[in-house]
Length: 273
Image 1 (tube, helix red, strand yellow):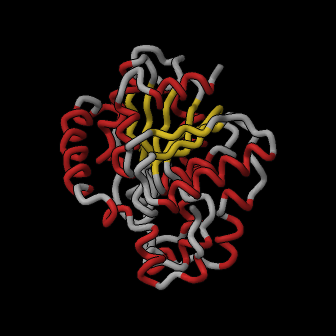
Image 2 (tube, helix red, strand yellow):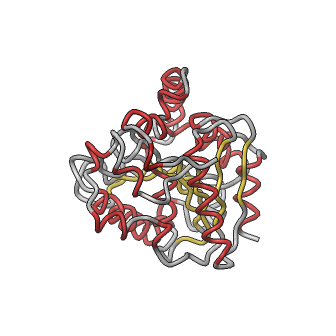
Image 3 (cartoon, rainbow, N blue to C red):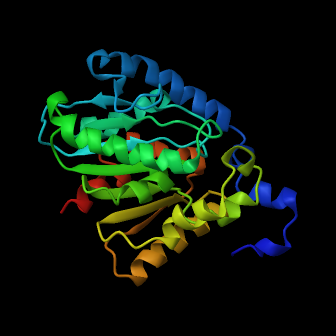
């Protein structure tokens, strides 16, 4: 059921988007993923920290498989545009590599050091770099863009890039208006222009295959955002399914990418058919 946003207190609005508070073991889950990512990432030392821009976070980590012509799953991390690093999500690549794909993980600057407008620009610059230089590093196949949480939002916008063949937006924010009314905006400092220009729900529909994914145990506002974005695309007859993962909270839903042959990666393969 949708919330009556206008009647909520500030505390209720903050809680509606506070995933860490909603998932009591979120810190443990994140630490386990971060720990698993360290040795995994170390096995690919020759293709890490590849710059696509001039700032420290404007870098790629590439995980080439055995077939350069296989699809590349590009992953954009989450953290409400203000925390986390690509390095800490390296273990997420296990599933796609196991099924013969290549994987690339994109870094970007964080708010409040930069604006959300700058972050979106960086994602497009990164995709341009990968399209040009990926083959040099063993990534020459079609690009399937995916991202989780804030990365789901950036995936929806990054799908506009001509290098992207298909996309999977996981637990994303597709209408930014409510975000400005929460604690998150202290770092984001969203402007009226950004809410209009950077909300996927307010932009022309991308007519590429795009799956919208969310977990059944997520906060109601996150579920609503995904369902509304799917309906928005469906109304324009844009291709792509809505996938609901039963029992998955906000932190567990992204772990589905680590499962070789799991629902998320089968969906990724289906988008290319």
